[in-house]
Length: 267
Image (cartoon, rainbow, N blue to C red):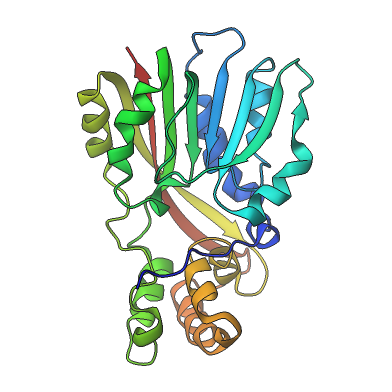
């Protein structure tokens, strides 16, 4: 039986919104000018919409649609919908990245920290590139830290004797994303001019058990969904392992986080 889709908590996710937004902003800065003066844009995996609004700052006249498969995230984003100050429009719709395909031409398909949740997401690239206007852009960012202690320890604990019967098939594997070079070649084969790179951020986190607090908003969601009210024993074991892997200092807790970026323009 396939694990249940994770239930998202927008408030938990937004607790580290400043750090999480950095990759979105860096990806956005590398997107070239778009072919249309009032472009059509999709934000695939928009989450609570807090950074989707930054697309309207870059392209004030754009019609931007945020797409997500989480009812909780879309409910959080809903109040942001409507006309934008530059004469554009922002709206939000339910969509699943595993099956979504453009039903109209887009000048930009943007996706931030979503595709790692989509098994075989590279197989979706042909449909997405086909849905771009000539000169349109596919830009995405995915975490590349599946071998980091935060994720490795989570998987090891989930596969331990105590938890494997309930969590054995719950978590993403360390091959959830490709290398930058692999993405570049896949998109070049589709006729795109592609650029790919990676960055490791050193997030300085504060508070008690801040790395645990971070992953509660993202990577740990499948575990929390699967265990429900029984999650605390797992969290106690995981918390102790994280404290050892990410020791607190007088300045805070350093959380290295590698991310992979890709910007591909359709010829």
